Image (cartoon, rainbow, N blue to C red; front, top):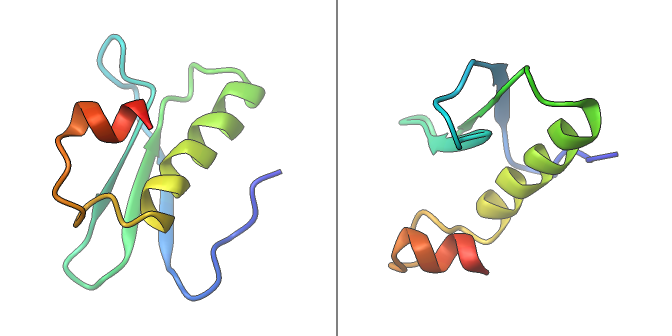
Length: 74
């Protein structure tokens, strides 16, 4: 089970995503994060997708200057 990140506020929403996209995360102006998950995925896939997006938050991938293909490959 994915646990909340202490000291970081994030919101999770379900949204039908385009083909090949299962989840995404964005920063908000108030310092919080929004994570969207595709509800067509299985519970196990949703758990993994959420964990993946939370790793982006924990690693601060939004500010590391790396191109997206390098971020997603790590």
